[in-house]
Image (cartoon, rainbow, N blue to C red; front, side, top):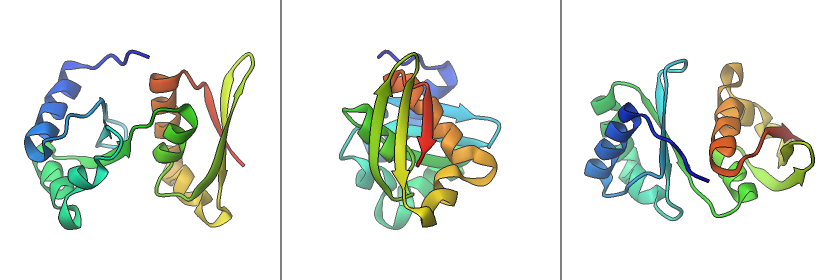
Amino acid sequence: MTVTLTDEARRHIAVLDEETDVTATDCIVDDEYDRVVYVVPPGTMGQVIGRGGEHVERLEETVGRDVEVVEGADTAAAFVANALAPAAVYNVTISDGDETVAYAEVDSDDRGAAIGADGRNIDLARRLAERHFDVDEIELT
């Protein structure tokens, strides 16, 4: 699926690349929650975060917003699990019907983390899953 980036998102991707030598595959500038969210290629999370989170801290200083990083994946199920991190996701089942729904089995202790304050985490996961895999909805089970 092709993701369309805004000019502002492209500028943020350039900043991430300069800081970490990793080129994000997607970037969302989320004004509602004052954050920048990067989707990075699988296997690059450690390089993006840096030792003790140093790269993320510098990025936050540079962009003046909170920075969140989501690891990309090759399948919709793996991507949804990554988008819900740091919640412990045991399994994700994708159901195709009139709508494509991802049913994510989340540890009961981590439901709050998966949902986030005011639904910010689940909303982001839904938005990203739709952009990358045409998933219409995410349901926590």
